[in-house]
Length: 145
Image (cartoon, rainbow, N blue to C red):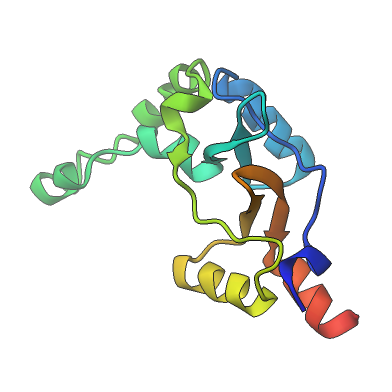
């Protein structure tokens, strides 16, 4: 079985100039933790995830080493969230995401997801986004088809 057999097409996407606020609203309404970022030609530019949005709020690793008690100003972190929401997607997205092709075996995609602890990855054909494949898609393909 190959990725094409189980992948989702017509996926929700973001543009690099979209606001983080609008993309977070899309992710929350669709109950997904990451969406692909594409250009006008549907070429994959990156991925934006909830983790990408939250990461700028956390102190740097070095801050924990030097002062593990006071570096955890959670109230200050939460107050910074409004600033993060005004950023553009290109400021927080992950570039060069791991991808699979529609013709790749589904267990290859599952292996990549397991190695990187991802729940979904983009499916790309000829540099263009063809869809997304999730661990749920793979499980349904393996166990219910």
